[in-house]
Amino acid sequence: MKIISNPLELKEYLKNCNKSIGFVPTMGALHEGHISLIKKAKSENELLVVSIFLNPTQFLKGEDLDKYPKKDEADKKICQLSGVDVLFYPQISDMYSQDEVSLLAPKVRGFVLEGTSRPGHFNGVLTVVMKLLNIVNPTKAYFGKKDAQQLNLITLMVKQLFMSVEIIPVDTQRDSDGLALSSRNAYLSPLEKKEALKIPLSLYLASKMVSKNILDAKEITDAMREYLESLEISYVEIVNREFESIKKVELKNTIILVEAKVGQTRLLDNIWL
Ligand code: PAF
Image 1 (spheres, rainbow, N blue to C red):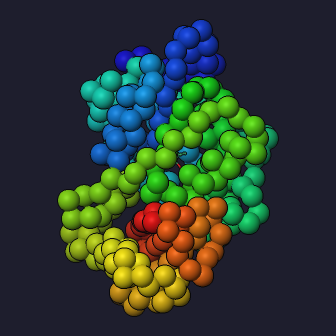
Image 2: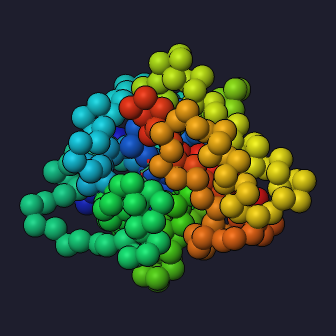
Image 3: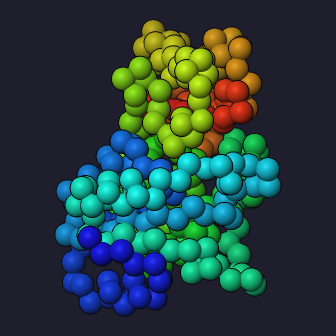
């Protein structure tokens, strides 16, 4: 596995490779969720590039940038064992300068849900993903469905800016107890982890309601909110695949999303129906 930290060096290295390139961007602290993205990218492309970059511009003031889990050596080992061909491992100064061109998330889709709890977060996500895609110029790039709004906005960016990469959504990976895998799960105490399980269980409750043909969005979100009562809920929302709020579940076109805080940890989860 080749490790490159300079963007221009990586661009040069990949320029004449004449292979299909699969790309998995990450912020490190790799877990089974990342590994499933990596495996899918490996199986669908001739060359596999993974990036590890803890992007400061997507963290708001007071968020967990400083304490975000860092596992550099373990991450490198995971990449090596997973058959990664090139690991892109830049420093902040390799990616950003003092006076930057900025990319703004769309005014509506970028500032609802996660964008309301974290205003400006998606500006940072889109900016870094744009930079990474321009550096790697992949055939396909892989993103988890757990960050559904991020996935939606990146897909929109690629379409609206006429970029040629194909964005591939990958299913959420869960612990055996149902908790969606996230680097932030490392913050949870055993007691908090038990509380956090209410999040996937509330989604299970929602899917049970839908299977009984209860499709009214308010009825479903009310039941979920009641179930999640002991947590600090940021949002429980039902949207279509375009991320527009809907009043009735539309089968094969619906995402039910939850964001809640357990202790100090903000957790996201969703189901696609
Ligand atoms: O989902 C993530 O890990 C990050 O938001 C991403 C896409 C790597 C951009 O920093």
